[in-house]
Image (cartoon, rainbow, N blue to C red; front, side, top):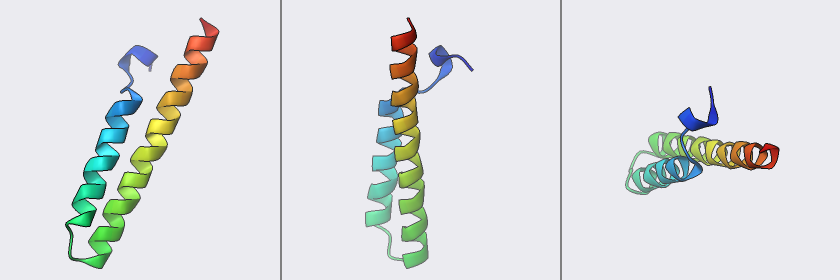
Length: 60
């Protein structure tokens, strides 16, 4: 997959924020923890997307 088809880091950051907000509003502990894990995964995707874009820019 080329960088032009990849979601930008901001997309993943917004998804992480969305799932953190859902987690904050959740009453069930297990669901809350699952939503937090998903948010952390999205944070990781945002970091990777930033790294890929940085490497791509350096290669150009």
